[in-house]
Structure formats: structure tokens, C-alpha cells
Image 1 (tube, rainbow, N blue to C red):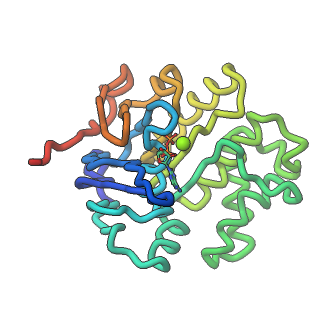
Image 2 (image 1 turned 60 degrees about the vertical axis):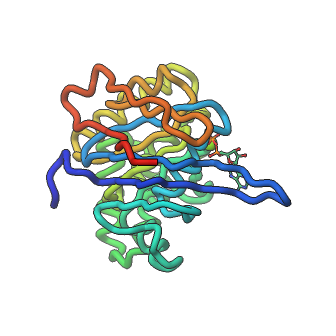
Amino acid sequence: MPAVGEPLVQTRDLSKIFRVGDSRVVALNRVNLTIPRGSFTAVVGTSGSGKSTLLNMLGGLEKPTAGEVFVAGQPLHRFSESQLVTYRREQVGFIFQSFNLLPQLTALDNVALPLSFRGIPKRTRQARARAVLAQLGLAGHLHHKPTQLSGGQQQRVGIARALAVQPTLVFADEPTGNLDSRTSEETLTLFRAVIRRFQQTWIMVTHDRHLASFADTIVSIGDGRITDITQTEHAQTAPAVATQKVAP
Ligand code: ADP
Ligand code: MG
């Protein structure tokens, strides 16, 4: 396993243009970003600035119009649809604002389900799901269904589901958008603890600067471009995110 601090994500002039009728929307405009292994990055910007588009391209949900995106040295921009499906299933964890839990399944089964798509045997799936839920303080709620859990607990089940697949990278798009401010802060504190404990790499999108300050690095975007990269007080202990200057 490569060391913490080595580049995990690298983009080169990454661009995404949407065509809507006769008009073009430049959602991302030549973004150059390097994200090291083991870091926690927040991407901030106003609505429509391109945050989700960036996340979707790093997460293999969409293909860039131009430019390159490498994750652990793999050229995602050259991947076929089926390679992207495998990448998403095996290397990426997604955490959603709306939790996206299946209402008819228990917490345990929600967390174990993605492991079945990887062909992991049932006993191992259940054991791993149980262990991750216990680490997130949900050992007493394994058999609860989502409606029997608070918003913060549902989000922790969502986090457990993302972590159970032991992903290379975790993406969270406005993960606390449906939580009150106190639960949001608790969730972000939990993110930090999980990232350090499991030496993971997380990229979170938020429009909330205060919540972004829980990350090591804040990448600001506006109009599809990186406008600023700031290290937070947590950054001393974390690898640094960078944007490369690329000749025009
Ligand atoms: P953010 O997440 O920062 O709010 P997005 O990445 O969702 O912003 O969107 C960036 C820009 O791209 C916006 O102008 C948005 O309207 C546009 N956009 C995003 N997705 C699509 C799409 N599928 N089709 C057309 N335009 C899109
Ligand atoms: Mg968005």
C-alpha cells in the first residue's frame, strides 16, 4: 500500500462542458489539483460553481469533456463505462446528503449490501458490517430500520456503508445538508476521527465555510475554476493539497 502523503488524485486541465439546447455551460474550467493520500479536503463554493461536477468526475460518475484525471495512477478519463463501474464499486465510497439508505433494510443489511456486489460471502459481509457499525457507535442499533434512527444515526449508517467496502477514496457531497448544526459538527468531528484512524482520503463538498474548516485543506471554486487553496489549523498533521500552475 502506497504511503500517506503521496499524490492520490491528480487532475490536469480538467474541464466539463454541458450542452443544454443551443447553449453551453462550462461547469469546470481547466482545473489542476493534486490531493495526497490520507488528506481531508473540503471543496467550497456557491451554488452552481462546479463542486458536484468536480466530485462526480473524481468519483467516476461522469466523464470529463477535456483534460485528465488520475486516481492512484489510473487514467479515469480513458476508462470505458464498465471500467468506471468497477472503479466505483471497488475503490470509491459515496456519502450522500439524503443518506440513501434502503428503508426496508436494517442498518446491518444496508451496510452489508454493497459487499455482496463484490462477491464477498455472507458471513464475512455481516461480520464486517457489524464491526464498522460498532466503530461508529451503532452496535446497539444493528437491527433498526432507517425510520427508527435519528438523522445523525442514519448518516452514521451511511458512513459505515461507505467504509465497509474499504475504499481508496471517500466522497461526500453536502453530507450534513439534512442535519441540524450541532449534529453536523458532531458528524464532521467523527469524519476527522475516522479519516485518521483508517488513514483514508476524503473529499467533501459543502457550501458551509464553518463546516469546511473541519477539513485539512479548503479548495474554493468559483465559476468552474479553483480560486483559492487554504490549509486549516488541522493541516500541520496532514499532507498538503496543491494546484499546479499549467502554462496557458
Ligand atoms: P454545485 O455543485 O457547485 O452547486 P454543479 O457542479 O452542480 O454546481 O453545477 C455547475 C454548473 O453546471 C451549473 O451551472 C449547473 O447548472 C451546470 N450543470 C450541472 N450538471 C448539469 C447537467 N447534467 N446538465 C446541464 N448543466 C449542468
Ligand atoms: Mg452540488
